Length: 61
Image (cartoon, rainbow, N blue to C red; front, side):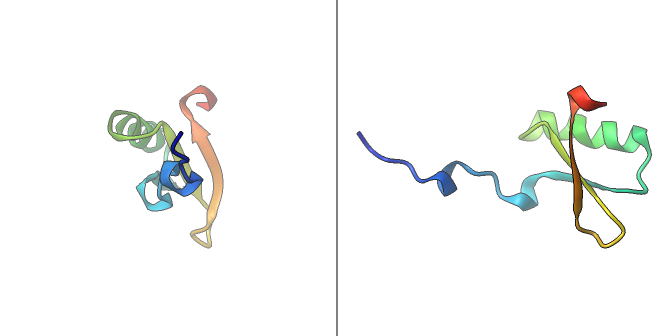
């Protein structure tokens, strides 16, 4: 059986949809819907320092 490295299964962080903490709920929902169609249904929310503050899924909205 061929072994698979975890890194080969991981999604690069740059491919996740991201919105600022100042985004409206509408903007967040639009970004999440686009992400679900293209790749993964997870949205990153960044803080004032542009660092990841929260991970949001459709179930949480």
